[in-house]
Image 1 (cartoon, rainbow, N blue to C red):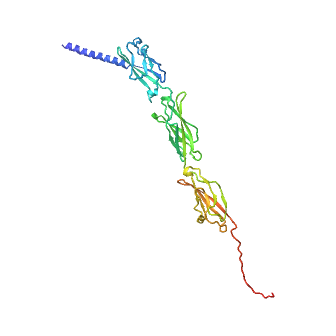
Image 2 (image 1 turned 90 degrees about the vertical axis):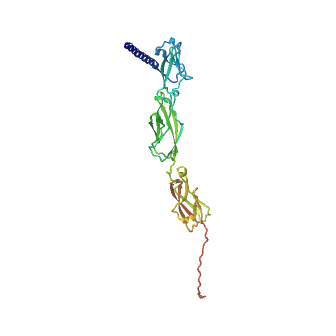
Image 3 (image 1 turned 90 degrees about the horizontal axis):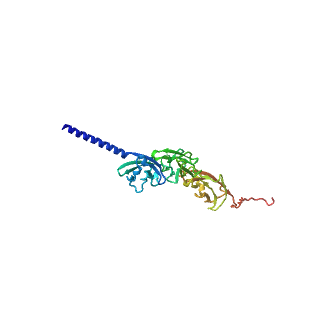
Length: 366
């Protein structure tokens, strides 16, 4: 009885070992892989590899055993020819479409022989080619930078993108030669290389209102492909220029008794700044004697000096008036200039005779 029991237990142990061995063998068959590589964009019908030969299958039995790729896709990328056991490309492939932003594009294919059942897995790596050029989100970029900006100030720009991977992606940037800006590039890992515009020389809006730059992104292909973005830098004005009079000396002649409203002269000043910083207004300076305000006035917009009251040579033959030109900046700048008005005498007074009379008596025979 004991002997029979030991035989039964031994039989169960043997059966477990047999089952384990079979399971291991089946797992080995199912997980066995071969791996191929092929470049993207190859033509339809390009051979990838001889699957039957590499798996040790008898190609004469493939058709009867219904060897095929298991795929749920309506338009699969690959197919196996049952006559020769070779894996072929079914349609043109775009690696960037299949494996977007992946460093390795590996496709796992499940193949099956139905009778008897046998499963094999095939890996196909789709290799990248340099079929895309770098491109920027914008073709034209406008920056507004104040002329007060200090050298060394940085402005981060948008990076160019290249769907290609590895060495075929964006490798470096170039900036056209110019006097005011230079380029730095920072590598931000997954975000790629970021171009940064650096001010290397202070800006002067009065010398140049804008600067045209060209930023070029270059990939690592041979030959390399590139894309570019035009950058327009508009220099914003600050009030760094005072008005300047057009003449060094203003000296005019004015007839006395000139009618009220007569234009004596017109001063003119210009300001190189932009907007309110360059708009000029005129006035008498604070040093002008208040009595002159009764004789002359100045047009704030045009700079015309106009007769306001009676001008009498006999009272004063010359006037020296300080005019100031100011811009409309928040902290306005002012320039002064003297205007000399010489009064011309006219014959507006008759001669005056003064007679002093007295009486005296003398003899008739004097």
